[in-house]
Length: 554
Image 1 (cartoon, rainbow, N blue to C red):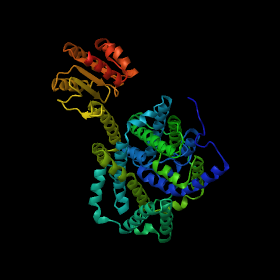
Image 2: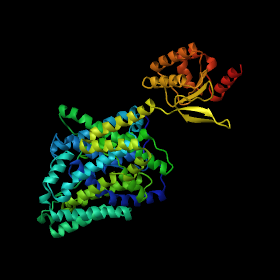
Image 3: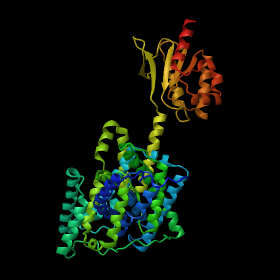
Image 4: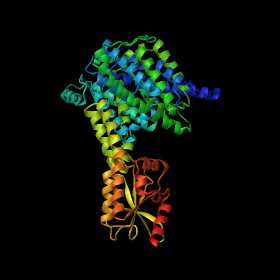
């Protein structure tokens, strides 16, 4: 495995370094409040959010290839492991943090295996449609989980439905000062996001919340605050858990692994294309693996290539990992000198920041476009979002993968088919397959829009037979446009040979046009060529039709 170190930093120049350093300062002001908010989702102490911006970010800048990807805490992965660990230990407890660290370590191991075996292609098994649905579900789940803190209502349930029930039952005990702060924070962040997206609205909310809380002693009004946060560098420890707990953590790590692979790959691709750059997905996977290993031993939690923070970095003007290194340096200064003021930060401010993040995860524009362009895919997105919201994130991930694959299989099972027929000018045009039509008297030119395999060979055979049986004139030539076929499996080859032999007995010439080298190799291997005869297999449709014309004249 060849290492390509510092690819996200090179090439360096003074001008670019100064530009990215300024962007790094801006990025720190914009994103530090967000990672504090992610700890509310993760169920970990607030300082662990800052830890995700230290060693993990540094490690990715060394081993990753993307110049733009910001690797740190992320709402989707935080929601996954906190949901999975909810029944194993109390949040923020010593055991919980050991479990959190082991999830990060297992995730790092899975990512390392993915890099060794070059499994970056796994990102393609989550379609854009179901990924939109999944993130929408995550947004709703996180948003609902924050409602209790926004209203000042105690909520200790972990499942969405139970949380909603506790919120409804507690509506008569709303803490109105907390609610007022929440409304101001959420409306302020969403307003800034719409009108002034470059301004660090979350930072303004945090600074204002700390200042006012300190001056007016918010805790005396029943407004919960974060409390003391330990400063200094994280201690390096290897997480230890029991064997039984380790086995329970594997599915959680697999879920994080899938989302990291899909989300990070998609994010790095988007920004590489935007800036006309190339990205090495396998190097990024290695960078993510090392970053998660660093998170595991430094008291942090699973890190991911965050779409939100990467977009913020781009808005701030970052064009290389230099910005992320400056970002990490600012976090180091905060850990060493500025954690004490954070103890006065109201929890409702963090909840408001997270709620605004959750709103951003619900991609209404993409959902609207999917509904307009592909109603079937829109249903898949909504089903995925519903399962994630009401049942769970791990189940939602599994469903997302299954639905993506099933949709692909469905396209192959029910491919587009058509009849080609000449118009008055002699151009060959596609027509819908309707039994009873033909290309010309005695001739049918038929196109099947997928490979032939065990699941669709019967559809293919039935449609061919139906077209022949119901043709207005006896069919003498049946031409198959095989341009969409690259493969025939064993089951389909048997069905096709039986069809060829049957048509030969009925004196119907079966001719293949547009046969590529891969299809021809399969036809030879499965003995289809010997049944049809090489004289009836052509590399272009023009040659196949010329053969028909010669036979017609003869």
